Length: 389
Image 1 (cartoon, rainbow, N blue to C red):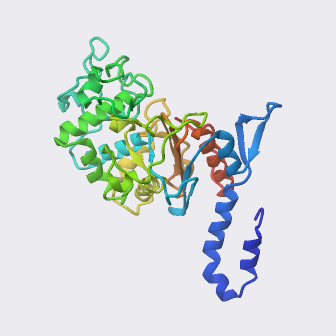
Image 2: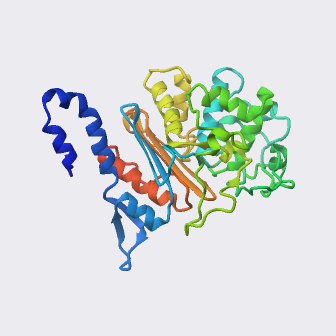
Image 3: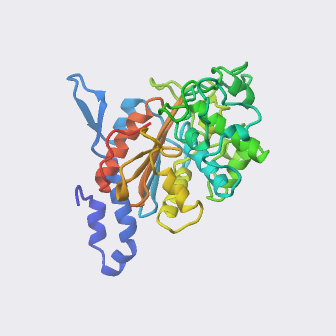
């Protein structure tokens, strides 16, 4: 072991009986503490242009990050959680594009139940949007598989949200790009299936598909299919937030540490970026996927999880997130970024190892990247290369 702390030495000095009772918490504390140290930041440049090595608290100060929260998965379960800078045990953050993975699992649960199909044309169900854009789409239907893997040829990569108190667009207004929507119309702009292009707009089509197929609000379907069954009690797509969650919401901040006016921007594009959540709750989702992969659960069909973890075409995405590696080293990765919030999640389903990092800062990915690298060292993960979007 490296860097053994005094408290760990004292534990070893106790009687065998006491040591047996306290060994698991001692190891957990050791590893949690070890995660704080030797964080490498190439993005925080010293005057000589060389990246810095900082501990967690120094890094947060240098990056002007007010709060950060971490859930570490090891052995197929949450090994430990930690929230820094908050009075709440676990603050609630905008999950931003991590919402897309949750949305994908909602859709895939409906596929498993026969409500949706991965490969049927979505125009057969959609009532408020059409993919038809002759000649681009001639003979090339948009499908759920293409939407979830970012290969449907759809535009609008991201959404910038709305100031608190602003008029919010409905889903049809978001899709049509009509006021008060502040984003362009969602449309097929390239041949479906031809290439990868990151698209938040495509996930808003998925939201419409789920609502039109079930004739229910997306937030309610998501709660029924994923959030409630997995015990994700601090997560919701509903807005305004319920009072029970509102009291622990982390307020978003710009890159220079300034608080977002009103605390955050509202994101009515629910499927693409509208989830509020915590690292622990998102870790529960990653563990659920892992349990299916390791044949311990039927939360999803095994074939469905296999499809999630296979890249579609030559792009980086499977269904709902980026995928890297193969076999025991296959890893699921997703980045989240709304104004004032950045986050990252990563999971090795064959190994039962992963991490979720959430922050209330526009520089949060710098911290998340360093924490992922540190976790890879401490927990002996395979190399993952550059973290995918």
